[in-house]
Amino acid sequence: MFDMGEMGKMLEGMQANAEKLKADLASKTYSVKAGGGLVELSVNGNGEVIDLVIDESTLSDKDMLQILLIGAINDANKMVQTNQQQSAMGMLGSMGNPFGGAK
Image 1 (spheres, rainbow, N blue to C red):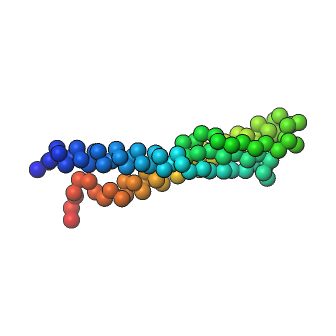
Image 2: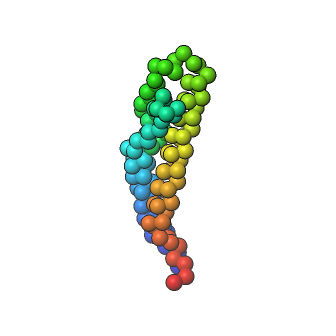
Image 3: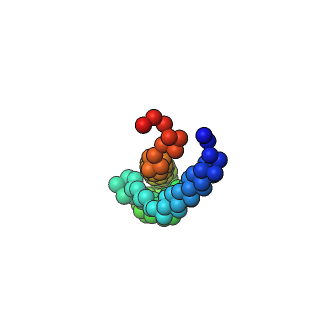
């Protein structure tokens, strides 16, 4: 028989795990370099930029700087998304099968 109390406890546990995961992700830092280090970008696990270093030599070439920034931002976002997906899958995997299933 389906127990609503158990389902409520399971949902509370999932919410607590999701909040912990969100905090863990936010505490991580991802750094990327573009153009051989001409642009260095660091983001946190939420995808927020926390540091940006631009080599002075790029300031005279706007087009190159834009390309380097776009590349660095895209690379950093991919790193964050990949980690979020892996962490979420790890969280789901650690829960086992909440619906019982065949044994």
